[in-house]
Amino acid sequence: VNNIVNKGGTILKSARSSEFKTLEGRKKAHENLVKAGVDALVVIGGDGTFTGGLLFSTEFNFPIMGIPGTIDNDLAYTDYTIGFDTTQNTIIDAIGKIRDTSSSHERVNIIEVMGRHCGDLALYAGLAGGAETVIVPEVDFKVEDVCNKLKTTQKRGKRHSIIVLAEGVGNAQDLGKEIIKETGADLRVTVLGHVQRGGSPTAFDRILASRMGVRAVELLLDGKAARVVGIRDNKIIDMDIHEALSMTKEFDKDTYEMVKILSI
Image 1 (cartoon, one colour):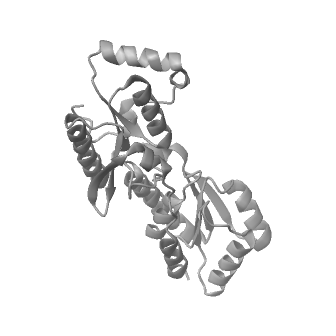
Image 2 (cartoon, one colour):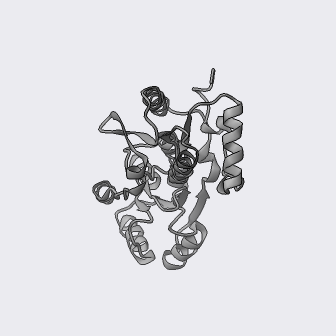
Image 3 (cartoon, helix red, strand yellow):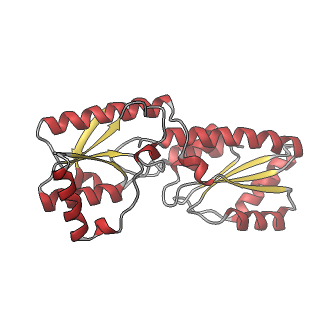
């Protein structure tokens, strides 16, 4: 692991494995670990990774420790997941650059970000980027309301607007067509896509990953297994993997309302 602290998580070259979903595939994985002299496994990912790790641990009595690594920040037991902060900063950088053009040409810009079921990326990047409208899966929205807000800001003399849309809500191009039809706005759509998943991690993510990694190894050395590491109130915590997977993530309604207030 030398010289990877400055690299994106893709350095792991990990991906979903259909073979691992079968008992035969997991047996093969276990045999390979034993042959390689690996006596414990730290799995980095989301709920799918943790579920697979737990199954593997149960079937073969193999020590597993989970670390949250997902840009969506969609795990309920931890305040932050590794990769979330880096992705936020990538989105904020894009919003800043798009706003320059949006302001110059008096346009409406829809920026589609990742987040199929969890709107944290759109919410927090939208707040930090000064978006006028943030659309997330957790809150129902009407195109009519978006259009009315645009009309209101135009009446105040504001000639440009940024809309941040989480991909799980719908297609940005379709939304753009509806807004143009209703308001006649000069509108552009930018889908950030996989640019959000790479790049050098922020200092926050580097420190968070380091703190979590140390705790995971300490727990394994203490004979603990089938647990996950997280962060709450800036303190590194650990808990039973079953408990972590059973928790439901709550949407940050206060921050969502803050975005609406600041965009008035």
